[in-house]
Image (cartoon, rainbow, N blue to C red; front, side, top):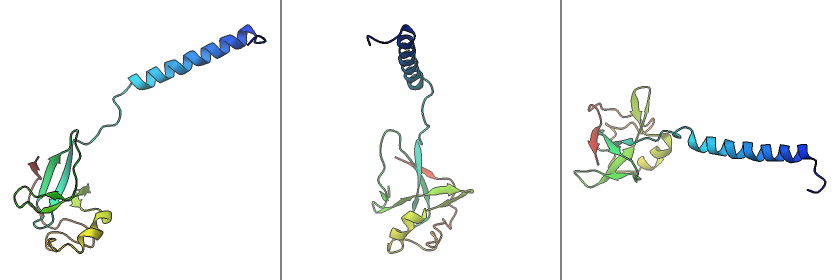
Length: 122
């Protein structure tokens, strides 16, 4: 930097300070994205909905039913006030002998029975 002029050195210093200030501001402002703290699952045998806490842990689906011990709890999404199994997950359910087609529409993934609000399980 022997040939640098004072205004060029000042410009470089201001750029570095601005960059550091931007990084500090970005890291300290806001709380980041809001993460879901629960997930809704459906029992494919009955159509009963369950809400499971997912704070600081992962949930593997299909999840074991709390009473029967069978892996019949599958993740659902809520669209327009209806719960449904996503199309991505339906392919695996079409060959599952535990699926009750009176409870789950296997062509659309829509839950056909209304058993009230999801029950909480851990």
